[in-house]
Each structure stands twice: as structure tokens, then as C-alpha cells.
Amino acid sequence: MSESVRTARPSMIRVLLDPTEEMKRIRENPVFWGALLLVTLAGAVLYGFQMYFVAQDPALWSRMMGNAEMPGVGQEQLKTVTMLVSAVGMLFTYPVGLLIGAFVLWFIVSLFQGEATYRQLFSLQAHLGIFVLLGLLVNFAGTALFGLNPMYPPTSLAAFVEAEGMLEGFLMNLEVFNIWSTVVLAIGLKEIAGLSKGKAWTVAVLYWGLFALLAAGTSGLASIGA
Image (cartoon, rainbow, N blue to C red; front, side, top):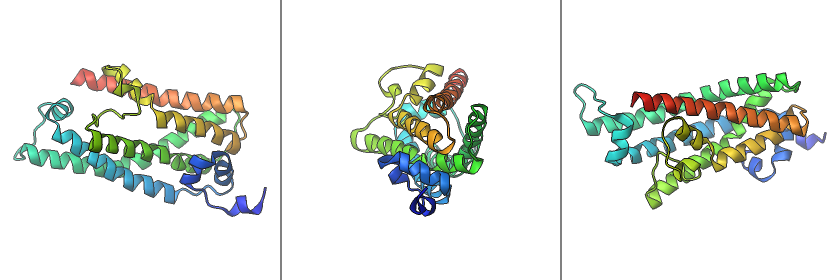
């Protein structure tokens, strides 16, 4: 292993351009604070804007909120509160989601006899956050410039196939950046955990499928309560 790989800090940009080399850097130097903070803060701003676009569309707002009310708070104030809560919520839910996701990934990797520490897999997940950020940016651009529905990422099948409940949640995960992230995850598991190519792909697809099913179930429950 060259000294440059041992000491170089991983970069989210290079995860896009040269994922194999970056996975080696993450294996040797599993830092995560820069990637985590960037995606968390930028994601919170973009998610807040997404809720702003939803609030400006009466049909989308009604679908999301129903007849929700707050005593002494008007509809415009409620919209502002919802946007702020959504943005602030991202500051907490994204890091917690990464913590849980990295543990689930570590557990699955262990079942397949992979050798990776929790810190290495957390760093991997943090750097894969570039795909989350790109997805939010494309969604923001699509809504701001072309008036697309902010509830459905334009890069997902849910934007093209009308569905409800569990199917809608599942189609939301059939999304370009989500799939791209899964491909890079497989590369990372091969380089970081020492898994064979077949095992790395199996773990990556299982990991994607697990959270796709979770999203489908959550969407199904939400549709029942709507």
C-alpha cells in the first residue's frame, strides 16, 4: 500500500470520479466529519426548500397535512413552522440514520465473513452521502426551474408511474442516485471489507432492498392513516 493512499483524506467528489481508489483511502483513513457535516447542513437547507415548494401547492399541502391544525396558529404560520421543523429535523435524522445504517451494514457484512470496522463502514456511508446531496439538488432544480412535483424525485420511477401506498414507497427507491450509490457501495465493500465481488454485490443489493422495503412499509402505513 503506497504512503499516499495511507495518508490521503477521502473526498466525496472523488467517490464519483474514481470510487475504487477512494474506497482504498477510506479503508486506510476512515474519516467522516467533513462529509457528514456537509451533507447534513446542505441537506437541511435543500429539504427546507422542498417543504417550501410543497407548502405553496394547495393540493400537495392538503395531501401531506390533511386537516392538521395548531391552536392559535394560522395556515401560513403553520407552513413556516413545518418548513423549519423539516429542515431542523434533517439535522438530526440524517446523522442518526447513518449511525443505524452503518450498524446494519456492519452486521450484514459480518454475516458474509467480511472484515471491516464499524468506523470504516460509517465513513463509507458518510461519503456515499454525496448521492443523497445530488438527489436533493436535482429535486430542487426540477421543482424551482420546471415546476415538477417536489414530493417525487424526478430521477425515481415514482415520478413516472402513478402509485399509492407501499408501491409508491418502493418506486421512490428505484431512483438513479440510489442505484448509483448501491453500485459504489458494492465497490466499497469489496475494497474495504475484503469481500469477493459476488458477496459485495449481494450485500449491497440486500442492504438496498432492506431499506426499500422499510420505505414501502412506511409509505403503506402513511396511506392507511391518510
